[in-house]
Length: 400
Image 1 (cartoon, rainbow, N blue to C red):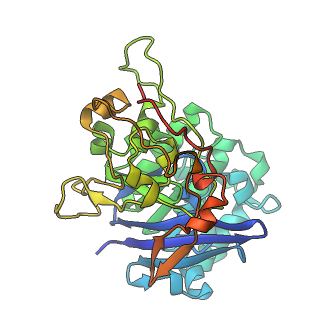
Image 2 (cartoon, rainbow, N blue to C red):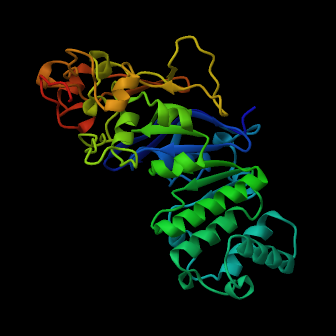
Image 3 (tube, helix red, strand yellow):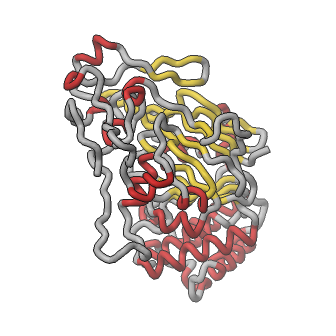
């Protein structure tokens, strides 16, 4: 049984400007000791997914509107606030993106760390302080006895991040969620923080969910990767398999948009054209269709599910032998993944339905705890384009 199991998670933000479709049926599992990477562009739902796991969505706007999140034998979507307070820090910990805004600026490091430890363990203040000193020394803070009396603004960005890691590991949690743990750090400090995180979690067998948009980080830190786009998981595979054989056009685009040391000199990068969708519009079809060079007519109509590359294959959701699955009607071939473009003779990306008329975003219908995305023709006709993106031309030349 997986330590963490997320099934068909749906998160919505109800705002004055309309509903934001932030997470749209995400499912994944994490075993004890496993490191899972979540990658994708900013705004694709990585952080929101894990804030939902922690029950830390901003309220009243953010709500879980479908699905299940099980930690061991507890359904976190139905857990009370008292239960969640007991779990947070002790069994599930999170390293937030910006330590300066996550640490209280008017409390010393000692006050914050001691309070965290005493909230979950029946220890004296002296024992909690000794534990805090041990943790700061473990993460490489010099003179921890003296630095405990410092305020967060007395530390550099890298040292604040080390303090956050120390606080997250203070109670030896079973699951650690690291949300962009190297944001705003220079490359030298990034390497130190990642090495520290990897060593400490390996020694304790802690499961890690690493959220980042840096593919270099997940390549060296994770055993398995989920690629997210517009609130969906579009591809998942063990890390070596995903880098060697990407199949979803979005994953192919991500890998071709970063420089490689083994690339021939002067070889240009291939950017992903267009912009991410407007999440205030309900998804219709494949969310990547407006930017995809591999799209088929079906991509505009129906969103594909996350399926194994080989039909009928046994699905393993965790571990180094996890099944390579992709959510795409027309996955890239191995040769196309290397080239970064479709290579089939005469292939032309499918224009939107009705030529320039396009297809807009329709309402979302729920069926039990699963979400079915549908489009209403009359409502769609009044909208400017699929997912709020510029309409592709009626005829599109193959991407070369």
